[in-house]
Amino acid sequence: MLNRKSLGILCTVLAMVALLSTCCFAETRGVTKDSVKMGMIMVKTGPVAALGLPYGWGTEDVFRQASEKGGINGRKIELFWEDDQFKTPNAIAQFKKLLFTDNVLTIVTCGGTPQTIALMDLIQEYKVPNIPNALTEEMYNPYRPYMFIFGAAYEAQIDIMFDYIMEDLKAKNPKIAVVYAETEFGKKGLEAARKRAQQYGLKLEAEQVLNIGTVDASSQVLALKKAGVDYVVTCNLVPPIITFLRDAEKFDYKPTVFGINWSCDDMVINACKTAANNYYGVSFVGGWEDNSPGMAKVRELAKKYNRDPKKMLTSLYTSGAAVGLLFEEGLKRAGTDLTPESLKSALETLNNYDLAGIMPPVTYTSTSHAPQNKCKIYKADVPAGTMKPVTDWREPKVMK
Image (cartoon, helix red, strand yellow):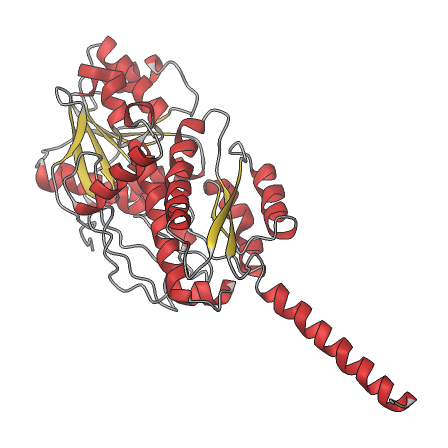
């Protein structure tokens, strides 16, 4: 029989065990013996849904395939996909829902550039390893412990465009203009273009805003034509680029146009036909028709889950699949003792990790989550209907 004193001690011990169990559970949010909950904030509806949907499908399909094969370390992945409609207040609310209601281990992507910037402090506070589709340098400089950047920053992409114009095309006294979306990422592209032009001893001939959702680029096209601009560097999405190229053809204006990764897609050619004759794209993912082993697997994945490449932005699907594959590898390396911290540490062991042509090799360390700022340059092959690479992976030229 237990006396009153012994009973009190026993109750205290049991309470401590219960408390420790609760703490342990809190440290392993979203994880059970046979499942792991992962969150994703990615636009599904609204003006930029055409970009968010294939990106999300790519990640979703990688996780689905892994689960169908038995899961990762015996755990199947449950993906909770929230639609922020590319609106920051929505993203903040959904971040909290995913963590505190759905109890996910982490949120693989937290929306676009403005949404991710708004969530930076919460990402750090709640230890949420994520791979943002926001590609500005401030995502990794200064170092942010829970943010892992997977593709060349907009600044690097713009630099590579200028390098190609000056070093590969050997342009003499080029008249270069910038067409950009008046968004966070568009403004980063503009700033980068100003800086790179100055490094080459050039002055931008014009700076034109072409916002997301714009259906008429006549005024921008006519202004650039009047200024004699022969190279147009853009930082925008697919729909405005299509509008710009179509209107340029309508006014018999034939500059060489460059687009960032979000507009380096076969859909541009399919929509523009001959208007895309002088169109180039810069991207950190392989082209849909590339014969690399990695891209062959991405095409197989899309086919397996009935994703029609003719009805989606394949470059976005590839980007989403790359994110899924990086997290899949991170989950494997984290082992059975899966926590936000162990997942972070596992991702930091990726050293020249080869995705077989889906994107350049990936390296993260405990002090740097910066991307390898490598891209390929693609040119529109209108008869073939595809963006074909005209370079291998390359980095921006180092300028003094």
